[in-house]
Image (cartoon, rainbow, N blue to C red; front, side, top):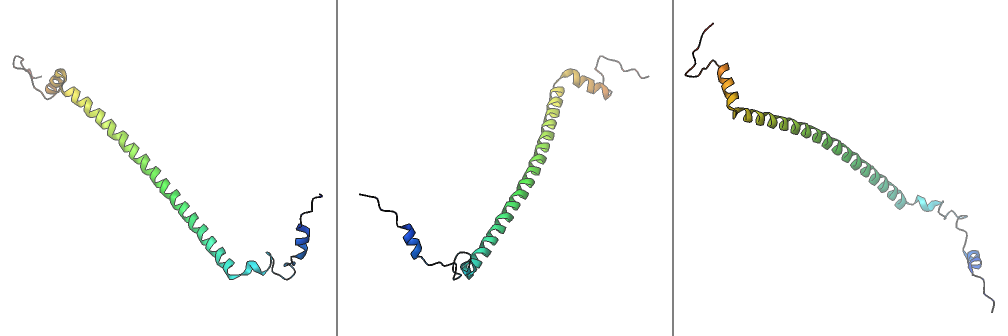
Length: 116
């Protein structure tokens, strides 16, 4: 039994050539109003997507600036906390308190104040 050839060549001969009548893909088919509408809808969708992408870029830039500003404020607050802790530890030291009192001109009971 010999294999029969596939019938494509005979089928292709029976299909009429639509490009001669202007009905192929490059002819009036793409000029139908629905395709014009689809092209406009695609263009509007693309423009909207680009607008949203740009808006997200602006938002990301603003958030990065805000993050940098907040990090700077955090560093300042941490420095202030360290300064206040140093003052607190100094305030609990008796030698420091005595030095502060002497700057104000105070003396102990057993000491004699001599003016210059």
